[in-house]
Image (tube, rainbow over the protein chains, first blue to last red):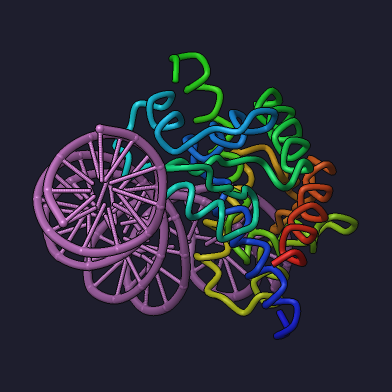
Length: 97
Length: 97
DNA sequence: TTTCTATTTGGCAAAATTGCAAAATAGATT
DNA sequence: AATCTATTTTGCAATTTTGCCAAATAGAAA
C-alpha cells in the first residue's frame, strides 16, 4: 500500500471511527432536522453530560456537526447530510445478516 | 434513548466499526472489481497474514465482503457496493476540514 | 460581585481493538 | 502416506476508546 493511498485511507478511517458509536449515531439522527443543546441531548440519551460533551467534540472535530452558541447554550446541527445516506446503506448491510 | 432505537444504533455502529480501519478500507477498495486471495491482499498491504485474516473476518462477519474457495485459495469480493458511496461521502467530509 | 447554569477538561480505570508470532487446520500436490 | 501452501486460531502485550467523577471555564442572571 503506497504512502498516498495509505494516507487517504487513514483519513477516511478517522471519519468512520467518528461514526462508529451508537450514541454518536443517535446524535446525528437527533440533530438532522432540529438544533439541540448538550443538555437536551444528554437527557435524551441518558448519559453523563461530560460523556456527551466528548462525543459531540469527536463529531465536531470531524466537521460532521456544528455548534452555535445562544446565551448559555450551544445548539448543535448536522453539517453533512450525506451521512444519513451512510446510515441507510448501513441498514441494508444489517438486513442482509 | 429507548430500547428499540438503542438496538438499531448499536447494530449500525457495528457496521461503521467494521469500516473504521485503514486496512479494511483498502481491502474494500481492492476487491471492488477484482477477486483477491488473502495472500495477495497481505502482500499489497504489507502486514502479517494472520492480521489480514482477522481484518477479512471482520468484514466477512458484517457481510461486507464474501469469500469463495478455489483450490487452496479463498478469493474475496465486495458484496455491498453502496459502501463505496459511503467512502465518497467520507471524502467530502475530509475535504471540508 | 456573587451566584447560577451549561459546557468542557483532566484523571483514571475498565473495556475493546490491534498486530505479531506460534500453533493449528484444511486441503492440494507429490 | 508425507509434504506443501494458504488460511485461521490462540495467546498476548501494546494502544486506543469509553464513561464516570470532580474540577475548571464561560458567561448569564441576580
